[in-house]
Length: 82
Image (cartoon, helix red, strand yellow):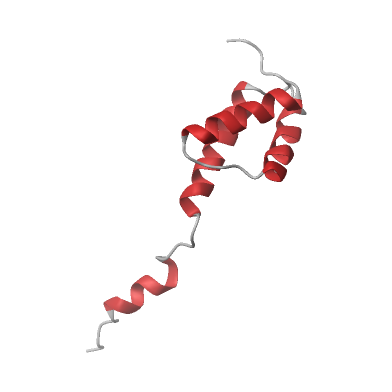
């Protein structure tokens, strides 16, 4: 009979997350929401929407990253109204 693997060794492989993973989840969530609601709008409108919604979740966004997201979202075609 083989000995069982140590329980303390199980958490080190994939169970630990780096600092900031919750912040990244919040950023991803907000960017996806804004991409649905503000696509095709001006870059400034998209930037403002991202910044406003991230503040609700307590995230201070990187201006450089928000600019990249806003540029990509504003380049998307608008969705037809439902």
